[in-house]
Image 1 (cartoon, rainbow, N blue to C red):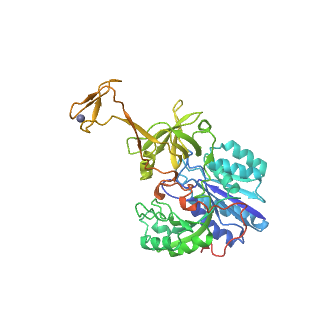
Image 2: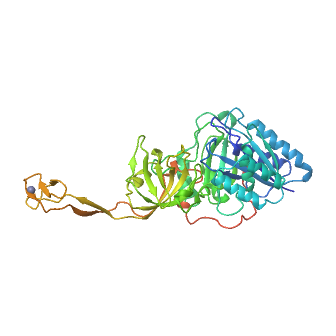
Image 3: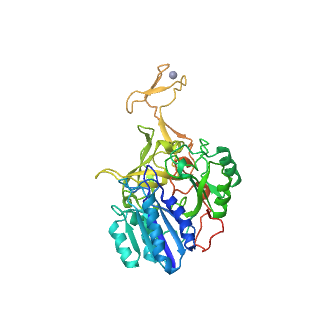
Length: 441
Ligand SMILES: [Zn+2]
């Protein structure tokens, strides 16, 4: 029988990782005779929900099992969730969902909602009843939402792969040893089929996280073969295990396209079009903010300090420019303007930058100053006056060009589609099948 196992919310800022539980489960479920029909799925959920722990990633394992082993399989899953979840963290509320048979459309729709917006636990419970799924929730049970979403996720359309390598238990909490030269070489050799290995602006290695969790490094790419090849090229401290996941990372799956600004909702990531109405301002902390409007509303758009040179692009916008912005909408106190945290900026139409400036003195070519509204100008250098002179219009050259702009890879979210993935999107239903080498041991 075909069994889908969804897991979510087992990690905390101080450790743990749902993907690690999945990687360990792979070994245990294979030992029970399970036959995987897909790579373990890693579904990144809406990064803007206020109660997320870290990366907000849920897991689904899809495998054929002997019906006589069903109880034992469930027991193993529960055993590992209970052994490796960070129960002490207030924001960690583990969940697990088991579904037998084909994934119904209602679950696929639900999954899309969980990735793009905020969904209630009641909705999840209703769907569990309807689909006959079996769910298990700990503490406030919020993990059930992500677990159910993982079961309904990644059924068609764009996806990527990640080779995740895990540390030996005794190394966790110490500095990770990942050879930067080997990462640079891997990046060069696999360019086009992997992404976001390095940050081009700083040269920083991006494949290794910095927290206390068991992930040693992760290489992201277009195919299982590509990430397998790339993962084995990285020299590092000793690895306990590795697993290849199929994911929605780097696909923009979280961004819902809206027709107008008034449709935006707090905590729901969006893509929307508008016109710049104020000159961008650099505020305390180095963040850059500008206002955007259309016929229905005005919002603020913010590029944060970590987005580096992306802020220079944002600063070169002027009122009248037409742009499409993408990012998470912040939750705001009632009555305030909504703020969209920029993940992407597409400059559609640049307006002409025409400015009115004081005339130049016809006598000495010095700078002139106004003698009052409609009263003409006086030369600051030679004193020449002319009551008839007016301001002149000059057109400044725009340094910005139209096109798509993203923050550097170090500041991108898991779900943000990087520039090098444009044109590589996968379409249609997922082809069944799995390459031979997708986990170790
Ligand atoms: Zn003069």
